[in-house]
Image (tube, rainbow, N blue to C red):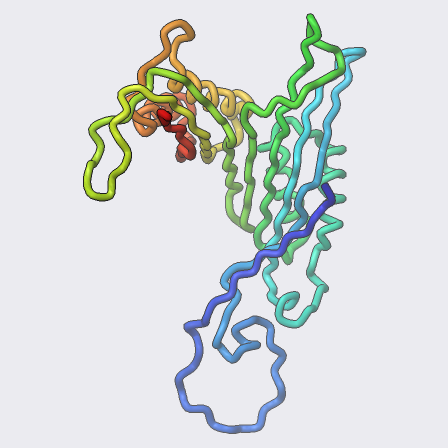
Length: 295
């Protein structure tokens, strides 16, 4: 997949337009520095940013014949203090998206990529330190789920793509403010063929769904959480804790399982466990349910 650049611009009508009568006094032309000035107060840029997306990193650690890998996809986004690049096409303060790509490679070479969260923090800190015209830096890192190939025994240097769930993090920082680290999992697709029900819900003229005392339960789970501090967190362990808590409350013990009266109840049970073990979790959302149909 080729590298792509991203531009995010939001404009809206300005509430700062003057309603006072204007007196026609000759004046020197004024250079518009903002969208509001450029449009006579009619519009303003309420948010904007640009960056580089889909930058691939493959980190290989070789310990003799035994190799370990981690692969990441990195996106960056920068916000400039000035609007001149948008209003006048003045690029003097623009850090090129190609330069952002090169920066990712250089930082990965210099510091390594221990976890998505720590590398994202390195990236945003670098941009804010190097370029005073940047007011906010963001870095999104997605990890590809590679597992070691099992060929009777674990293979020394061969791996298989195993997308049980997708791990991601979004690190952002505004100048003179603390770094914000938000992590999550997506595409955790689960299914069980029994011990799931959905009964006694609202029945009215809009309802066609019948009570189901026994049904197939399938959903795609997403979760995200924000870390209060980066100093003592084991990011890899925290992510695994969240995933394991969700799977445990969904499936239950291997031989007996666990009964689910609704998707909402099951996810709530998982949320309680996650909040006890990883208090930074913000939400868990269900997306898909399969309903049994008799033909």
